[in-house]
Length: 298
Length: 235
Ligand SMILES: Nc1ncnc2c1ncn2[C@@H]1O[C@H](COP(=O)(O)OP(=O)(O)OP(=O)(O)O)[C@@H](O)[C@H]1O
Ligand SMILES: [Mg+2]
Image (cartoon, rainbow over the protein chains, first blue to last red):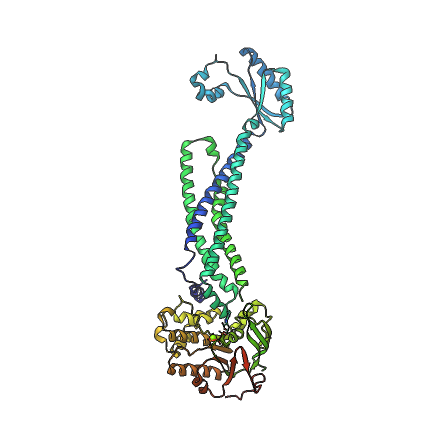
């Protein structure tokens, strides 16, 4: 808009008393958006972590061999490996390197983990071609014949409680965002009603001078959308600042799970859409409330 | 042209109370000037409210500008209201707008370009003697000054019909004369004018004006001229 049209709009907007009414809404919406963005970030990051975990664990299994003496263990491991490699269910079977194992155990055993005399189970890392309990039992049966001491663990299975927990967190975050959106719409409806009430006299005059409902509604809608926009900007910027701080700290911790819990570009984009979506929601709620209210007057 | 307004057996009841207006039948010829009189509480404001579409009747037929105003859908009311200028008995200025912005309101609502608004507004304010108070808010104006802003707002868009409820109740006789002159000149330009007033002296000022008298919600029309108005000779 430019020139006389913009000026006209500006003049008409002043028909509503700027000092009165909806200011408090800015802060309520700011708080709502702050919580929503944090909630959504939690949900998105957790979902990413869950996805990463799943893609790492699905179709993976570990075979553990513990025999009474190391030579036997080694022999069993060799037979197990060749048996597994012969199965169509198994895409890849790899002996976990003793060095690697020692490195994994170091936090618990210290440098003793590297002691060649220490009885350490032999581990075979499996990548399965198909998933499911049927595959696992075929693998178990095949192993049982050549290496009775072998134990097969689907990594998925022992990580299942973790995955369930992550799914729950995602669900809670989603519910949180929906509740906050509902509460925001309710706040806007209340603010619109209060605005209509405060300006009842002016609206009546506008109607009598030939204003259409759309003209009257536009006055409020613009104002509410602008207030919601300011509130949404404040709230989401604060939330994003906080998220950046948190992710910087998480990066310093260097934890693997936290590292996978990053938002990623699509996550950040989704967060950036939230204030826009909320302002649209606010404008819609305001329009709905106002046109409904105006329809009841002559 | 046919009558600009036609009432047939119109009744108005507020809520479940008695009828405030009963069996009102009259017609207004375009370009004519009417005074509406009656004791306080006789129903003058109620009748005018029907006329400027702020109230629907409980019964009867109202035709406005040749169309049925009783069953008219809400969406068409704004278009009709823009053809009617109203001076409310209680002024109804928008409190946080200046006198000039109040006067400009009908033009802005009608979507007139901003550049074309300033001149007629200041001209109109000058006419009602408020050129110096263009930027004043209503609350800082006297009752008579507020009334004049209300009148300026009612006439600025050159309505086809002007409805004024006690428009001179708060001004001195000199200003009353001046405002009446304003109505009269608007009338000469073709606007149908309806003025509710108690002021008998005022009524004698306009030659050719007709009288409508309300008594307890009923229109006195012994000669039947209000039902069948004679065409008015051009001035
Ligand atoms: N909105 C309303 N609800 C209920 N009753 C009303 C309403 N408006 C007016 N009345 C009643 O209708 C009757 C006529 O009122 P109205 O205002 O039309 O009188 P009036 O002739 O304009 O009086 P005045 O000269 O004092 O302005 C009064 O008895 C009044 O109490
Ligand atoms: Mg009255």
